[in-house]
Length: 512
Image (cartoon, rainbow, N blue to C red; front, side):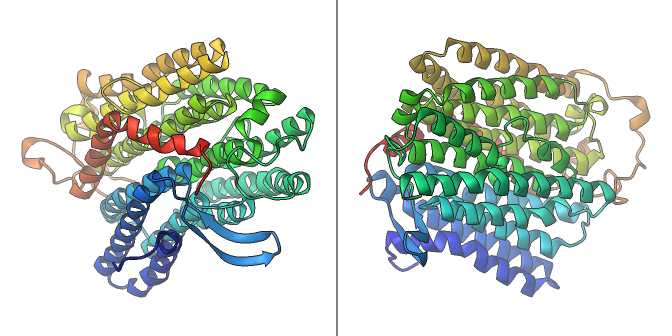
C-alpha cells in the first residue's frame, strides 16, 4: 500500500468492507473465489486499522468529512482512542470469524452463502462507521445500517422461528432507535448547539440535572443493541441464526456497537464531570447492576447452550454500561477493557458451540456428557473462554473486572463491587459445569451409534474428520483454527491490558 495519510486510512477502513460487499456477489458461482474475496477484504481492513493505531497512540485524531448535509450536520469520521480499540477488535475478529464461517457454512451445506458473506461485509463496514463516527448523526446512520444489514443474517434459515426472531429484532432495535435515540439526538442538538463528539462533553452548564437524567435514559434505552434490560428480548431470540451470526451479534459487531455507543455518548456528549456533578448517572449504575445479576440468574436456568450464552452476553454487556455509568476515568477504562476481553472470550464460546453442533449435532447442555473425550480441542477452548469471561488469570477478563472494581471504589459504589463479585460466582456456576460435564461424565450409551443426522441431514462424522482414527469427533479444521486462535487471544490479552489502558487514557485528553 502506498504511503497514505492517516485521514485517508480512516476513510479506507470504513469503505473497504462495502467494496468487498460489492465484489463478493460477482463470484457467487465460484465459492473458493467468493470466500477468498471475503478473507482478502477482512485482511485489508485489519491492515488498515493497524496502520492507524500508532497515529492515535501519538495523540493525533485522523478523520475526514464525507458529506456536509446541512451546515453543522455532516457525515464525518474521526479516530479517537475508544473507536480505535473497537475497530481493532472488530477487524481482527472478522478475519477469524470468516475462517470459521467457511468451515461452518460448508459443513452444513447452508443455503444463501453468498448473501451471508455479503451482509457480513456490510455489517463490518457499518461497524467501522460507528467506531469512527465524529458526531451523533454519523453514528445514528451507521447504527441503523447495522440493524438492517444483520436482519437477513438473523433470518438466514427462513424458518417460521427465524422469521419471528427477525421481526422481533427489527421491532425492538428500530423501535428503540426511532422512539428514544433519535429524539435524544435532536434534543442534544437543540440544547448544546452541536452533536459533535467532544472530549469533556458538550452539555456542561447547558442543561439541568433533570434534563441530563432524562437524556441519559433516552440514550441508555434508545441504544437497544446494548441489550440493557428490559430492552434485551431481541438477543436471545436471535440465537436461531447460524453460529457465525451469533458470534457476529455477540462479539464482533452488534452488541459491541451498542455498549460502545453508550460509552462514547457518556464520555463525549455528557462528559464525566457533568454526570458526576448532576448525579444523573446514579440510577443507571443501579439499573445496570440489576440487569447484570438478573441475566446471570436466567442463564443458570437455560439448558440450550446458545441461549445460556445469550443471557451471559446480556450480563457481560451490563458490566460495560455500569462502568460508563460510574462516570469516572477508571470505570470508563474498565468498560473499554471489558469490550475487548469479552469479545475474545465470548466469540470463543460461540465458536465452540457451533463446532459442537457441526460435529455432534448437540445443542443442549444436558446432551454434552463425555463430549470432551471426543472433542478435546473444542472443550479446552471452551474452558479458556469461560475462565476469561469469569475473570480468572492468566486470561484477559481478569483485568476488565479488576478495573471495574477499582472504578466502583473510586466512585464510592461499594455495592457495585459486591455485585461484580456475585456475578463472577454466577459466571462460574453457569459456565464451568458445562466443561465438567464434558470431561468428567461418561457419554450416554444411546448416543454412541453413528447414524444420527443434523438439521440439514449432515451425518455426525461426515465433516468431522479431524482425528477420526483416534476416536475423536472434532469439527472441520477451519472451525478449530478459529476457536484455537480466539482462545489464544484470551491469553494474550492478559499481557496487553496495560497497552489497552494507555490507549484508552487518551479519551480524557484534548485531541490534536
